Length: 115
Length: 115
Image (cartoon, rainbow over all chains, first blue to last red; front, side):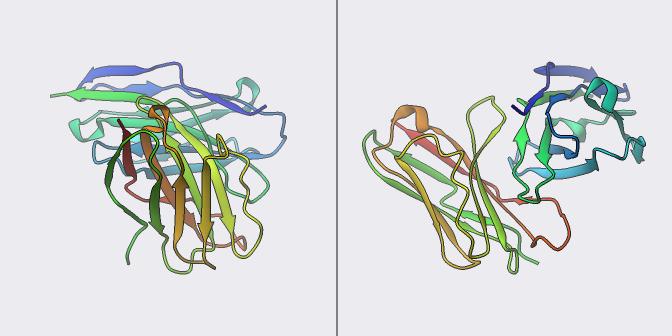
């Protein structure tokens, strides 16, 4: 069975702090995709990143960075120098390599960044 | 260009009534997905349409749920004899065809409340 676990239900930080959102996944597939989505208070999911399972290079995009470790089945997301606008629910998701695009989501982590 | 749109944005119904939720995907997107998001939970996959292929209904929770899509355009999700546990946000997503893998683009969702 495929599963995504985001153990942190809620995180609260003060602006400018760094914060890491954890994601652990389970799959028997050898190839797959991993995603992060942001859901701001407006409700619409915003795509942040997609990684495929054979590319373990870490990625940085501005204040965002992602650490993919296949050995520990983790795909963690770090926000550096957090801002109030980063307050949202963040979802990690897994998709099989079958081109259907079906996403298996974690429960989400609610991040609150206080000024 | 226009994104994925969904209507209505909110729907309140009485237990036992039928409801129809509508999704207008991005023009040209051949794949369409429905997900359910219960309060404080991650998204659960419901159904997937790809072009004129038979839909993948593996996520539908019961036979009270059904969905249709006309060609590569509008989709409707129907819930018959609604129950209180059907209360959730129903999200629709679309993505381009299978030639290259792309992320899903999500609509704003329909918030369904069953009294």
